[in-house]
Image 1: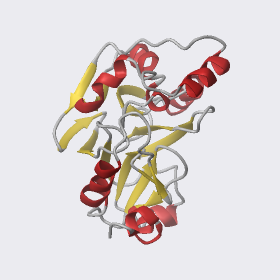
Image 2 (image 1 turned 120 degrees about the horizontal axis):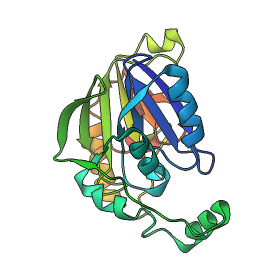
Image 3 (image 1 turned 90 degrees about the horizontal axis):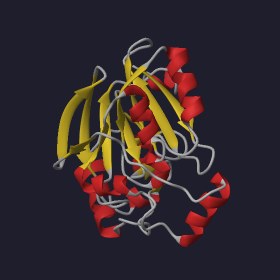
Length: 237
């Protein structure tokens, strides 16, 4: 398995590209603001063909480029059913200050068109395969109603040195549920602190320590490291 990260230049959201190997189909995860040119460079360099766009949740900084990516390759967007409604207008519910910032940055009032095909993931957990990858989707609300995390067997090459990666067995695409040393905010549209605590307790804490965590913002970490250093997990242990 290989992976590349393309952070957006506006708010630092991580867009990931994951594939079994170069020259094959891939998953594009959370394409946010201003990632299209650099994403295209990664796809061309590794000869990858998107099979789907995977969304950990529906906030604008994680979905802003989903429609052009989907349309360029004729592929669906996958998101938990409880966040499908956010793809009709991810700007809805944003603070006036953030909308003004986007207008200033883009030079005009931002506009939005949703992806042509959306496939909803349902239930507390669901296994599925796409782009030659087997994934476990787990509903983890709290940051939004439909926030989800996705586990893959194995650890991708290209993100960690070989010595570090050799001690890990699986990979978590964590979105904004879990960061290195922190967790996603619950004061944004769809946020719920009690739901976040349940997700951390029931979904994250039972995970094995040797799981790589690829968060929606910031650098990679592991479940084991967060279990003993992250104050939000320590408070629930």
